[in-house]
Length: 151
Image (cartoon, rainbow, N blue to C red; front, side, top):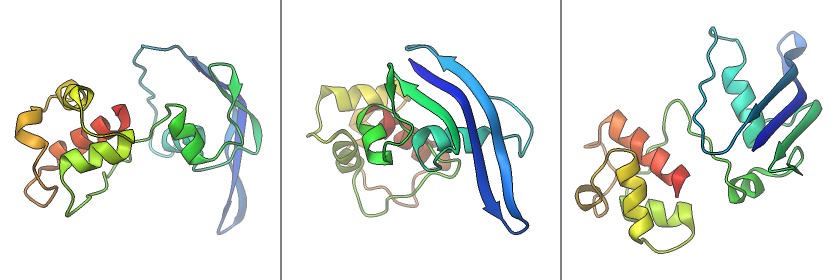
């Protein structure tokens, strides 16, 4: 379970400090899918980046399964199971899909690796040994990125 409690975030901008999040509160239960909606500039991406640890909140707490992760580093949060998929996925050129998934999971490719590709609608047999390059569509790259988060 992920709990965001009274989270606030102030960032420095051209005009000085700007409060971009104020008293954000919500709870996400395990094994459920949630959607965050809102207008451009409404704070959706900033909220996700704050949960991931890309931004450090100026107030409030973030709890994962009851553990306060507010001041944990990105890599610590990732080890605990928090992932973030960027709007424009990174293109890891020159690396095979199998290698990328092994890096993400910290172990050699296994049946789980195939399951993660299947979970995002890709056939492992068609993708594991392919090098990530310009031949992949944006959708394929996004699916592979999501599979790395699942790994």
